[in-house]
Image (tube, rainbow, N blue to C red; front, side, top):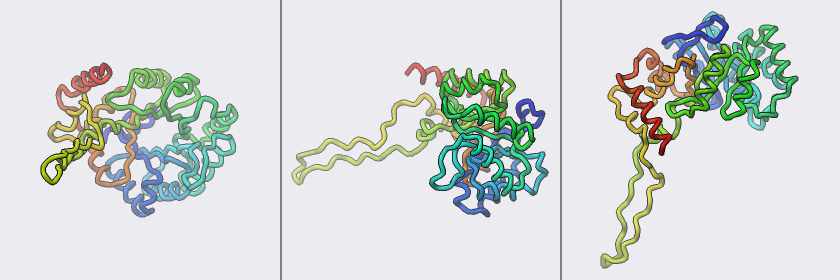
Amino acid sequence: MRYRPFGRTGAAISSLTVKLGASTIMRGPDYTRQLIFQALEGGVNAYVLESADPVLAEVVGDALSVVERELVSVTLTLGAGDGRRGSERDFSPEGLTHAIDRVLHVSGLGWVDVALLDQPGEDELPQMALQALKVQRSSGRAKMLGVTGDGPVMDAYVSTGAFDVLITPYHVNSSWQVRARMREARDRDMAVLAVGFYPEAISRRGRPSPVVEPPKRGFFGFGAGRPEAPTEQRPADSFAFLHHIQGWTAEQLCLAFTLTDPAVASAVVDIDTSDRLMALIDTPERDLPAGLAAQIEMARVRSAAA
């Protein structure tokens, strides 16, 4: 594992950040603990809780208690509910403060490294809520404030200067607007974490193509019907070559490329299986095959022109 500076804190963060949420905890507390232990053994020191679910927080706190608290970074996603059925989005000052209090109480973590607002809309975050978060930061209960999301509204949140961390979708075919937002965040000394580095549009190219059955004929060979169209159309894909690089999976290549961007401090992996985790943990140590970065850039140009 490789480590990079984490914003202006002076701390170091692993090139991979593991996201933990409902799909993980549904497999049981023991499974979740084991997944975290495997990540720790692989050098991962950064974790994102996708909600303020108290069960998830308790398991994460218990698993991370085996290492010194200062050596790991825990991001708590706020505003997305508490992970339980029927919970609603809540960006009120009371809701945000209560979520942090509850997670710290059940987890024993002492503090959260990043209090992360989940995709707040343009008018969804009251000024008093931001002030409440700043109080949490000044008290040391939240070391940094972050925001995650996509779209033009994120430009406004970045420009406020109120946040220390930006988590944004970023992949081999991201638009120039996303790249410009990342540069702006970096220029403001914000730590940038990338999510969605392996988008569905690319990952599905590696799946088997649908089988088209030959048309059925009538009893005497007449009446041949039109063949049924495949369930999924597959237009020419500029990035199809990513599935044919020897010694690499397309997901590993997308991850490695994302980590070449100097604005990216860490890539967030949303996984719930240990096999996939172990397949990605070694990727930051590997260099992209020679010439592949240029090939990806050319594929981006072709994709934009299509």
